[in-house]
Length: 211
Length: 396
Image 1: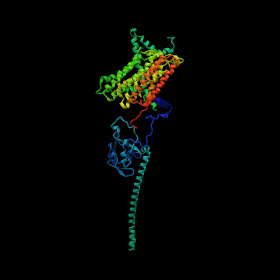
Image 2: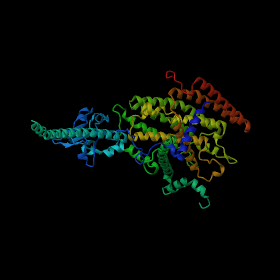
Image 3: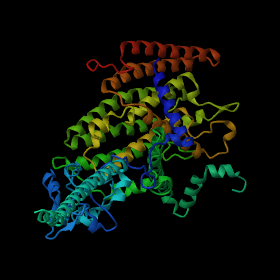
Image 4: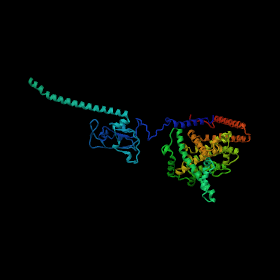
């Protein structure tokens, strides 16, 4: 029947119109600045640098290997290596970045830097409210602005951060075990050498005695 | 003054105010000053109503789509029109290099002026009409038709393919729907026997028991009213007949190349057109300023007029929130194959109503003819797919 569909449609919109006043569930829009929904765990915006411990500068995992700088497709990373060295998380002496800049106005959030980093030092942030009134300096983040604690990383990507921690702990354990083994071997060698040194005169004595 | 009841004073308050203001002037200037005051009132009230309507439209549409609508500027977002106004006033006014600058500049002015002229003959309350013309209806339609000129001026002078496409669509649509709009109004003239809008309202301002003699409550009147409503929607380029300014396909059609205040004038003109056509519809079919029930006569007449206009505006918004845009061929088929023949038939039925004796027989006969014709036309039309659900030849 001509006009029937129009009446049906009008009733539907009337139902919505009246319903939106009585039922809060109908209004699905999140009133953004006041209300927020938590970001999804796999959300990613721009990279940040992870540090361990309370001191950001001392705890930075980055060893300025510059792999991310070379791999970055839009070339938004700039790194300067230090002249001196400091111990990393396993205690090995490494260089560290004296300068680590990311131009987030150039970054395309591809996550390649994260994937290539062998030190789990760079990760993706979920912070998206980066508006600034300075479009050059305001969007060029230095290493202090990029540094985030491991706890923060656990806060935004819990599953991934736990995996990373386990991997690092394993690596550390391996290195420690190796060091221990090396130390033990060295100790054993030393002991053996000492024993040999001690034992050498001993067989000597009977030998001499025997002779 | 002390003897007149308060309801009469309230009813005539604007007339009394005008007379009081005018009596300070010398007698020779009084008629002129009275007219100027009336013009000022119209030029202040309807744009104010426009501002109010834009925010209510956006909020209402939002509600129909289960959103809140604008709610940031001021309490519940009601100061949104102020923000919009400031924005459009401070925006850069861009005129395309190749545009015909004079016509481009004149088009929005011609539109707004023509639309405002229509309000001159609308009785917005008892004794509240700027010019009580004997041929007020004719004047109204003459002014309404000249808005088409401004739309084509805008489209042509912009030198833009979207503008000209929008303008051509607009002309085709407005001329097609002008015919049923006039034909459905003519029925009222046939019964009321006058082209004067005040006389038409007076003819409806009678009551049987508590019920009014509005023309919409007769079979021919209802049919006319529906045809008038369809044609009026098309005439004002409102959804579902908003092809000339289809945003998604023509980037706002004939006013693509307008920005800033000129764009705002087009917007204003469109809404004023809605108010004036709603006012005319209320005057012709819904008793103008007369009260809907006899015992409600104490409420001032201008309140009833504006209540009817705003109800019509709400229905415009409701339709916009519900119906998708028609295709050009569907639009034309609907105008020429359904609305026009039905309006013509309704003209005959009205003549029958006029010359049959009063009584229940003419109700039965007229209703039966109209209902039968509607069913027949709907059925054959749907069958031939002249109008009805869309069919896609290649998509399925």
